[in-house]
Structures are given as structure tokens and as C-alpha cells.
Image (cartoon, rainbow, N blue to C red; front, top):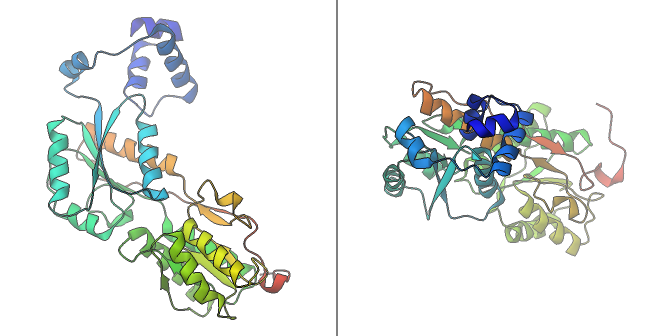
Length: 333
């Protein structure tokens, strides 16, 4: 470690902070230390470090079997934030309940992890967390302020409000919404943001339609909406459902955005290549991972710090799928 410090022109304490994932290190210094580690082929002795510190520098992440963009991106954000100070072990559950979640925690205790992050986007996961008792530091991700333990989340309510207001500002009288499954907390919060914005504007509140996050559900619902001439703007709970909606509208001869404006949520990598390119709400999963890691480190260093991180503000990304109804110029507000 002293050799690495000399090579990088920093103190050995700074090298230690980089190796332990400490947040109070500048990006330039971190890059310099990592370059010195690579140049010298330095490998920390994990066993010796554990004997000295009493920590393994291993974190556990409990998630569930899912290829959905949101949860998968949360997991990637956590793994990216953990490097190089921590290694990450993952337990994927078929479902969250009061039996499987404690079993996963016990398994991680057997691996001597320093702390655990739980990706818990569904109501059932929060219910399971509420009955969980453990001496190990725990942080929840993806369940907003609903978690009975310290948590980090995207501000879904704000994201849906931004998208809905954008469509209203373009001149649409109201906005229809294809929501995600009602058991998902993200979906619930996006519905709430949509409803609050319509009510605040005095706009009519259409019936909510639930999808299942899939492009197929957006496609099937899209055929229903395409047959309704009063539908001029639709907010989708995620981008895959928006993709299905775009295809259904095209098959029914409804042009986007002239006849119907469409806005998604997530900003998946393919969103800019939809036809037309999709206006959507971007979530910063990298920042979510960093905040989750720092919050967990707070719990590891002082378990009395049981605070919840401030929700991360999402960003509305404006592309070509949303415009004024009938192609008119948007009214001034």
C-alpha cells in the first residue's frame, strides 16, 4: 500500500480510503490511485484485512429474478458504486415473502457480509421487510419512503408529474395513463403523480388502465385507446409499454404525435431509436447506487444513523413522440 501511495503521489491513508470505497475522495485522486494499483499489480490481502478490521468488505444484495430494466439497472448501479472497495454477492429470490427474505439474510450472515442492500419494488417485499429483525446493517432500494428501514429511491411521483404537465402544456385537455402493476410501488407513485397533476390543473381524470410492464400489454391496451377519438395524449408507466402502444397506434392509423402524443418512463437505451423517438422520464440509476452504498456505509460505521436518503429527482427527456394535439402550436401558459 505504501508503494501504491508513493507511485500515485498520495498518502497511504488515501489509498486505504479508495480501496474501502470511501466517498470523500476526488475522482482525479481515485483515478490516480487505481492507475497505480494496476501498474504495480497490487492485490490487497483480504484475509489479513478482515483480521485487522473485523470486516470482509463484502456486501450482500437481495433482489428477485427479473430482467426488467428498472430493477436490473438498480443492481448494476449498486455494483458499479461498490467497486473497487467492496465485492458484491447477490441473492436472487423467486418471490419476496416472510420466509424467503429472512433465509436470504441468514445466508448472507453465513458469508460474513458487512451489510445488505435489498431491492424491494413490490408491496410484498416491503411487508416482508417490516417483519425482518437483524443485527446486520440493511438498506432498501426502490421502495421510496414506504420501507420500514433506511432507503433510497427515485422520485417517481415527480417524474410522472413532469411528464403529465409537459403534455398539458402542449395543449392536451387531459392525459390518459397506462400504469404498471398495482403491486409495484413505482407504479403506485407514478399513478399518484399523474393524478395530482391533472387535479391541480383542473383537467378531466380518465379511467386508469393497468398493464404489466410488457410491450405486449401496451400493444393490447393501445388497440383499445386507438379506437377512442378523445384520446390525444398517453403517459405510459414504462418504455416497453410505450413501445407496444406506438405499434398499436400505427396499425390503427393514428399518427404520433399528430393524433396521439406518447410519453414513457425509464429512458431505456433503445428509447431514442423508437419510431418516433420517445419522450420519456430518465432515472439516474448510477446515483441511486452511489447513495445506497453511502447510506449503507453510514449504517456500518454507526448503526444509530437510521435516516432515509432524499429521493433522486428524475429528468424529462423531450424527443419527438409528444406534440400539440392535431399538430397545432402549443398554447402559451
